[in-house]
Length: 467
Image (cartoon, rainbow, N blue to C red; front, side, top):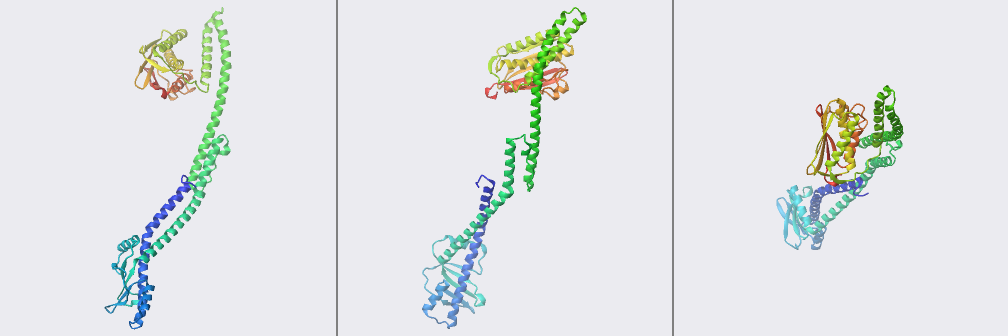
């Protein structure tokens, strides 16, 4: 049992609180003990005075000294019938330093006198006045030494503290046993189930069965069991999805090879003597090309993770020019070269730190999506790529004047296979672009998308540590 454990802290707090309570009880207890001690001395003195009264006020000196010694006093004065009489007496070793009247002393003053006698180690002679027992007179007065009384008070205090300490230790042990059984035991059971589950989360036998009697611990066990069942189901689903992804990747790989061969054969149909075949050949080639592209993007996204970016410092303007040139050629090959215009606004001296190949893929995906969205409207449009920088980031904007993103794409932005920006799209382009940007420690945000067009903002951190 250590102080860092629940039972150890409970035991320590128990001892502290019990000792605090005993301190609060100690002062009144010692005060009562002092009052009883003085009252006992008055009774003994009264009994000793009866011997003198029984002998008609004549007693031997040695007997008088013995009576006073047994009573623990120096003098005894008894007032009877309004007459004050010195019954027993002896020589005082010191002058009287204080007088205490037990008939009139209130509780605050009694506590103050007790603390004074307990702290003051110097012996003193005090006068004590009290009421005789059994109505043997009007009052009785004695003188006594405080040393024996202080010794008795210290002994009483030590005995009380010893009893309190024993009581505290016993209470702490009992509380520790109760804590171990009622609290620590159920908590350790929960921890054991958590450890076993962490070692084998796919084993349903490690899921905890709520069995605690305490409401709070049982609620924790119930919540833990629900969480374990949810995590187990998620892990199983994730494993199935991983297996499905591997199967799709293999199918896409083989299908791509088959389609590539079909594409070569379809190209030869354009030279056919049959006019109908020649007219159908471009459509067949386009369909096969789109199927090949889907297989390639699926294979690219199906990788476990993209490689870590290799950061270099380079001019942004040439990279943007390469992207624009590639998309212009693709637009001409698709037959919509005259409908899409590219506008760039990148300062010639703007240098950024990034992986050039990965950033090219990001900008190419964004530009291709914009070009295809404009081409689908059969209306002229413009795609603008601009770059800028501030104190913390490099910013690249890709905007177009297309029709905007469809609602399904907006609801599942950057999620693969949930809807692309055009009819028949898969959404892989934006998902891959977002992953690549996150690998740089940056962000890809949709600034706007409405009837006037769409704009994306790419932010790359200037600090290497942020990547």
